[in-house]
Image (cartoon, rainbow, N blue to C red):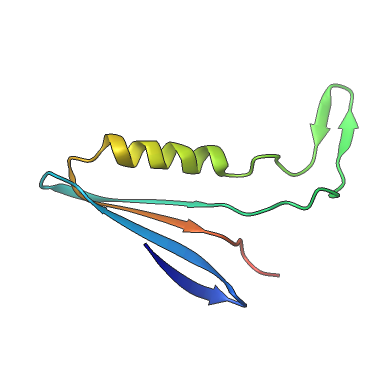
Length: 87
C-alpha cells in the first residue's frame, strides 16, 4: 500500500495485490469519507431526502471481498480516495 497526497493533506491510498494466475489486471475504485452529523434532511410523507448514511462503504467492502475471490488474476489493483472533489 502507498499513500498519495493530492490536496491539502488529503490523499488516496493505493493497494496492489499480486494474483496467482496469468489473467488480466483488474482496477477497482471507490471512495470513503465522512459526513457531518448535523447536515439537514427533510421528510415528505414516507420519503426522506438528504445525504446517504453509508456513502460508498458497502461498495468498498464488496470490492475487498471481490479482490480476495478473484486471486487468480495476475494483478489486482484497488484504489480508495479519502476525499471527494474539493470546493
